[in-house]
Image (tube, rainbow, N blue to C red):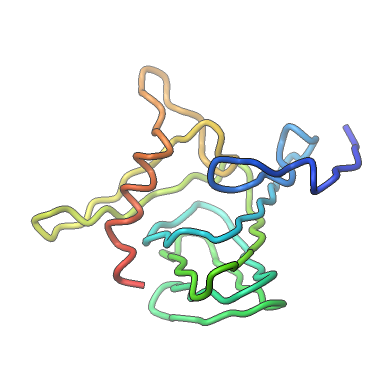
Length: 154
């Protein structure tokens, strides 16, 4: 399937706008737009992810590096590398491209100071793997709560 996608028709998502994914005929990649992103604590994926800042500034922590990026700058996050995003300005807008169903593992900081890795499965998120049979999907609010536990480390 090939189609022309009108960006303006893709607004109104709960946290981000999916610009394209498998529903549009893509077989390997997706793209989202996020405006005023919340802090996204440490997590990693099983595939490549690319962040492009359109407006404003973000700090993206990739492994042990902290990078500040502004409009027109991109950061490539390799597979299996922990990363997190902190917006630095109101009105920040970014686009993100990644691999379909590459999975997401969130580093959750527990109250006792230990960290656990949790694979999350939010059905509307194109980079998450399908929910395993017999398991419950992860709620969007639950995902936000998990990633917020390490946002202070960014």
